[in-house]
Image 1 (cartoon, rainbow over the protein chains, first blue to last red):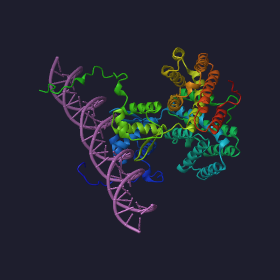
Image 2 (cartoon, rainbow over the protein chains, first blue to last red):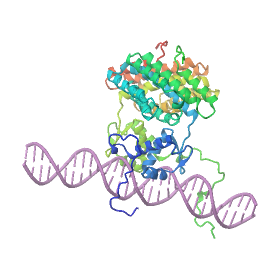
Image 3 (cartoon, helix red, strand yellow):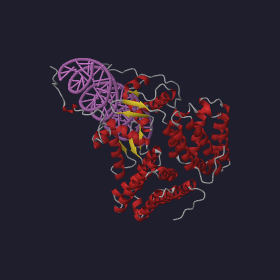
Amino acid sequence: MPSGPGSRPLRVRPVPGILLTSDASAESKSEQIAAEIRDAIRTGQLQRGVLYSSRELGERFGASRTPVREALLRLADLGLVKIERNRGARVLGPDGRGVVELCSLRLLLEPPACRSAAAVMTSRDDDLLAAELAIMRERADAGPEYFAADERLHDLILRASGNLRLAKFVAELRQTLALDGRLSVPRYQPVETALRDHGDIVEALRKRDGVAAERAMRKHLIRSADLLVANTSEDNRGLVGEWRRWIDVAMPSGEQLTF
Amino acid sequence: MPSGPGSRPLRVRPVPGILLTSDASAESKSEQIAAEIRDAIRTGQLQRGVLYSSRELGERFGASRTPVREALLRLADLGLVKIERNRGARVLGPDGRGVVELCSLRLLLEPPACRSAAAVMTSRDDDLLAAELAIMRERADAGPEYFAADERLHDLILRASGNLRLAKFVAELRQTLALDGRLSVPRYQPVETALRDHGDIVEALRKRDGVAAERAMRKHLIRSADLLVANTSEDNRGLVGEWRRWIDVAMPSGEQLTF
DNA sequence: TGCCCACTAGTTGCATGCAACTTGATTAGA
DNA sequence: TCTAATCAAGTTGCATGCAACTAGTGGGCA
């Protein structure tokens, strides 16, 4: 194939689903591939602990090694894969310790962000939040649409907080966490509980009651993460203890855990 | 016959388990270049708002476009440059809004991490912290050694907290902030104040008094960021207000600001 | 004069070439 | 038989080639 001097037919691979953002070419190939690799890890098409070469991934996703490498570098930064020099990229397994770290970070950031949002959000944010909540209630079957709305709702709140950097970082955390969590949480967390939690958060925000919104978000995060950590396959004793410790760190002294 | 006609001398492999200790080539060229570009931005050799091509940067740093591109992608993720398609990479200016966002994130994360560290740190951490504090006191001229020790001290605490992901993220924040901050802070913050702050933090940690350590860290961060935000060249009114708002968000209800 | 279009210079994004490195299998030797 | 050196296959990391794209310029035309 190096012989063809003329125009090679650009190999356009039919992208397997996922949302096609506005313009196809606006997103660089490396970004597309990063997203595809993430999805492949999530669905198990790429197995944890296994080494993959950039050539193999390139063939699988219809690209050359360069954009694949760029995607892998990005994913390595996010902690999803580990690049081993001259060996390949290893998909990292669901690390119980990592799950606790991610959950702790969310717990430290999202409740205060919620409080901040209550102080500066606009009525337009109210409408957007209500819309997502409505979708969640409609699609209460815990399908992909439900989770997409969940995702957007959290993101709306974070962006309404006024700290875009915070919003971006927590979005990354959520993406990484979803790799481990999405498979297990819906089985253990009743949808109605999650719906009630989100309803409480949105309601408090609508009233611009920052303290209540913060508390509701904290409750929601703790409840979700509790299940996540408890059902991590590894040794749970130390893990659960560590997670409880971070709850303690993140909890204001006066507030009580009431479930 | 196969008596090694082209034997290269590098073939010596005494023990299969030995890994190279901090070999220079252990760090990839793209990482080196990312660091060099960051330094060049800090020192002003690369000017804010200006477009640079990867070829130019490659020549300046002695590499081809590929590792430069990888470095730029990484820096773009960190928010230091903006890659404009088919145009180049623009060095982003010191955005006042961004400074507030970065400071707010540190304020939300580092004090709780401090409290966590007090709960799980070991006597070895005590020694390391004391060593860095001693260096800071020796090099109280606010030179690079002083700031390096400052940096390491903060990092030690964060890693002692037990949440490596948090430590890594805050380290990134600090790196980015240093671009805007390091030039201005030492001129405004008296070294003895900073020394006292750090002394208080380390002392509280030594006593394993998490609450005091958390408070001391919060005080230190607020004091530093106050100066940083106040001296940002842009319109300060809104900026300072925003920063005060985040202090409020991050402050436990009972605690008072006492300077 | 003023407007439009093609052209040129320059850049990215992706594909590919190449040397160094890692590792498992094979072969020579004791 | 068992050990150790050697080879071969495969991979990365970096360099380079190439088509597509952008923006600014100058000339032609109304």
